[in-house]
Image (cartoon, rainbow, N blue to C red; front, side, top):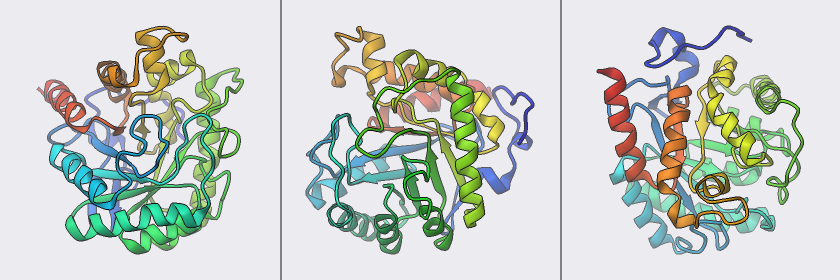
Length: 307
């Protein structure tokens, strides 16, 4: 594993090898080299929760037609990936049986695939059977919030489908992933845990691996901010990095206080500020509820860095 310091913006292409940073999504290539490319220079992943209880948009897109309409809006706004989730990971959320999650996710994947065959779809699940069904229905990427800890066989599902796999850092079991944890050195421990998940995925034959530090999952507000500021340390794993800070509690606490955080709907500009720092540190995929604003911010940011 490389230990030298990663490069700084605007990141020369030869710093990030094509076999790891150019992702093949069933014939569509996503350039995930940090800070490269036209437009935003970053792959923007729009969040589509088909759940009744997600913290920000729960219940809004349960009907298939509403979900497809939302996907169309995000694609038009510049999203390059739509991330579809059928189980909430908010604090206190109850785990969902696989069959219920499939019933939520599958019709949406099928409908978006029919309506927008060029769209790259990700399925946000830690359950192999849900991932398998979604991939067979047209999804391209698997996004596992447990980083293969809960079901290591998820790696085999991704490998068999030649699908890129997002491995997110978290601790604990589904249902308590956001519970507070203790860290002596959060960045070092997250990096080491992600390295273990990468090894598990590689042993199963996964070619394309994306790492996610798991902002908001069991870290304190200070630790979340530190992780954003030290994303470049995680790039020593030599994998594209996905960051997801959109509207999360750390943004609310920073704009307000931990006891009186800014409301979820008032966290856009704070989310954009944290995203900008993360991209400057080397994040090359951004998961967000607010696609249009994020794409606009990143487009100007990328143009400035490339000038």
